[in-house]
Amino acid sequence: MRFSIVTPSFKQLDYLECCIASVADQKGVVVEHIVQDAGSPGIEEFAEKTAERLLRQYGGERVKNLEPFELLHLRTSRGYTLRIFKEPDEGMYDAINKGFRKAAGEICAYLNCDEQYLSGTLGRVKKEFEDQKKMEVLFGAAIVVRPDGGYLCDRKVMKPTRLHTLVSGNLSIFTCSTFFRRSSVVDRGLFFKSEWKVVGDAVWILDLLDQRLKMRVMRKPSSVFTETGSNLSLQDKAGAERERLGERAPGWARAGRWLILIVYRLKRFFGGVYWIRPHRYCIYTVTSPHERESFVVEKPTYRWVIQPKGK
Image (cartoon, rainbow, N blue to C red; front, side, top):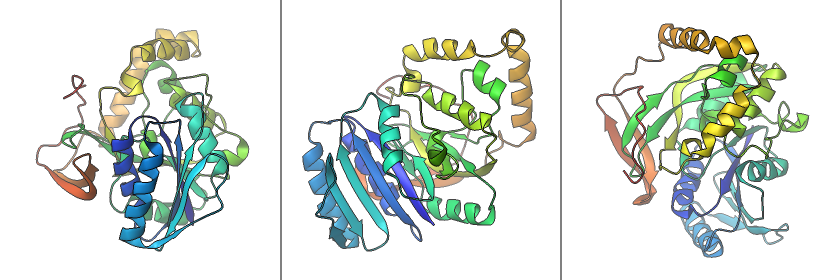
């Protein structure tokens, strides 16, 4: 079983270095990592330094015959392939679509530059898909951290529903912890709609729900989401797009929004989403991009308090 991970990139090379490291060190899996960069200053030098480091660390070889827009194509001796493209796009979602069209893996996912996988994630995901032959989409939990890697909160997830996705303004899942069979999504043409600049994830999830894909939740955290203060979901224009998306809901659902949210939160409560044990997580940080740094969480919380920019 082969994975294809797509990362859209633009002017976040320090985070991208951590993201790449977190995919490259996954054990027991074969994975291609496709980076779609829109033209970050220094991306060519970054690609060269990344190639030197990965080949020195893991061994392997560079592929000489590159495709159009491709800056780097290397294969390590432990099953990790990295391809970096410098290619114009119409925004993050268009970049992701370009990456998925290049993907060859059976299981696909996308990971933003400021997101990364925890150790052993892809091995656990592989087992889930092997054990659940009919499953088409898998959602994992996530840990939200500060730019320095410090802990903010844990976010367990629930399978999304159409009405909650439309009227809540929030997704019940994290895309950084979402995995799917390429045959069920990409081969059906279920790409992101690039005209949406902020809530395209929600629109995409609604498309998957419309197709009645078989979905499953994995409670254990699989990824880390960094709250940088510049995340698209936190920008001012996000509110306008959420309002536009909410207009797709039936009038009775908009009027009864409070009831939909109460039912959703009750499901989270009885599903054990709010109960989190102390734990430890190990991630790459901008000050430790080549070795995972350990963080101990003695008082975990589900409550996500948005941090002031720069904190």
